[in-house]
Length: 239
Image (cartoon, rainbow, N blue to C red; front, side):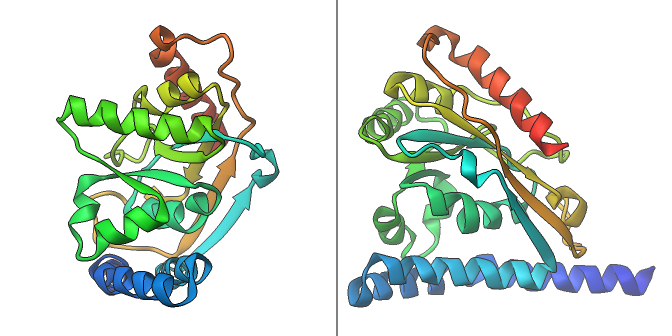
């Protein structure tokens, strides 16, 4: 057991260093690729970074339901239960999104803000209500024009591995823009690497896109109710 625990801790440390500690270098490579070869080459840098991290983690990834993604504007609302989910989001969900929302802490990495600006990632500052409303207004305008937005339902990692309370932000954007919400369930990561643990066990990860939830008939005052409904859809997809 001690040898297994040590092996899992080493794997976890390797994963964290390869993905997070090396993020500044990857951001710089992204910017250089963007300037030299264009957006497609730059996005390939992030794609390769995610693939390498998932390979180190020993993750076998299954993607389900991509055929359910609408052709026009929509809002992807997803759960987050492990650091592994951050890699899944960047590697797979953001592949379908023109705009994504990320916590301000990720913008502290060197070259992150410049890279985020080019890749469509908008920074969310917790505790600043005025800034949050400006951010929501900006992304709503883009979604109304046909963009796809990726935004976490919980707004932070779930501490116990379950799907936490969904906030209203993503639903509010969808209601205001008049576009559907696509519930996205990320499953398997807590069993591999629970929040707060360094130990990482190889295993299976799954990203499942659910049927789009139409927002026609929902008012802004009902955004919390809609968020609870979408959360229920995510929980069911995770089973």
